[in-house]
Image (cartoon, rainbow over all chains, first blue to last red; front, side, top):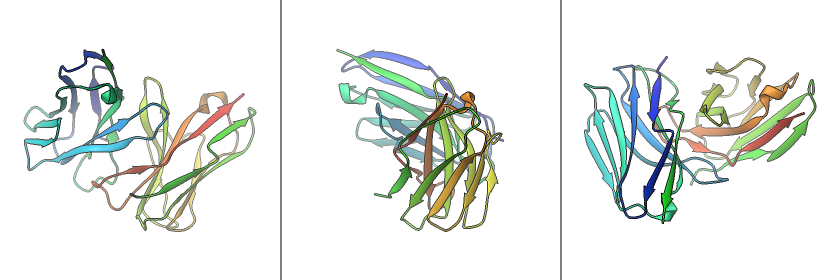
Length: 113
Length: 112
């Protein structure tokens, strides 16, 4: 099955700066790459996703980049705010016909004042 | 927003005990999932289902059974609970594969 590596596991950034989280996957047939945010004590929620027919997608301060050749995708949060402090998970869909997502192990993002 | 309701929200049981975690979704989603979340391991898939009566094995199925009785209801069964099964369990649902997954609020299970 698909394997997803996510780095770093902990990320500390100054408020107002940018934060970047990187993920890599193994199965070149993966075509769907969502990102989930989990705030303390809450459930994970989808914040942005990208499909393999795109290289870049932006929703407000969130930017997702996909490099299919390198089998890497990344989340960039610009102008970070205290509310961005959370756990973030990337995921990949796996081979054509796969019926489940494979999640990375998560990144704890800490926004420092 | 899609609603996924888990019960109980917290549960303490003894080693060797029998536990059932319940999940109901009211959005007519085809797919339902059970995950466990542990520090350093992220979200790991235990079992999932794409319809009533269907069951698929996930990545960490040992020690767990599951049953999808209806389109709405998905249960996770621990028949001989062990301390290694102490975890935060999430139920989730999605309309299809490769679409948004909606998570419940979670059940914190402690096996003593």
